[in-house]
Amino acid sequence: MFLPKYPDNPTPPPAHTHAPADPVPVRRPTLPQISISPSAIAAVLVGGVVLTALLAAVAVTAISVAIAAVVLRSMLSDHHRR
Image (cartoon, rainbow, N blue to C red; front, side):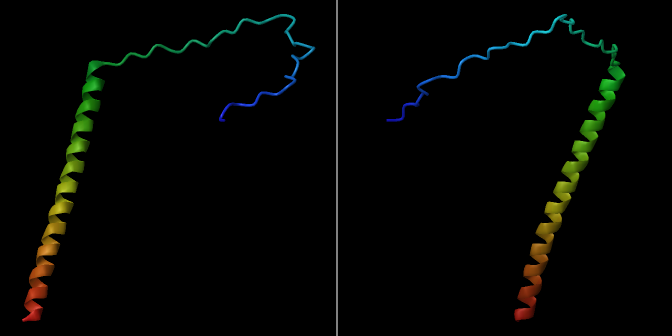
């Protein structure tokens, strides 16, 4: 039922195949040697830790401000109802 339908006459291979007369070997360009010092790795790690700590501090502050706003709103709405 779900079998693929193949063509009756498949296309023939091309009559002319293009081959270069003088093949040029492909040469990859050499990349410069990069040396990474341990102090650079330590600096990147410390920077990542500091940025992650700052992001966590901002998130905790935002959550605490939101909770304080909800509590204050609840207290003020109770005060206005009386």
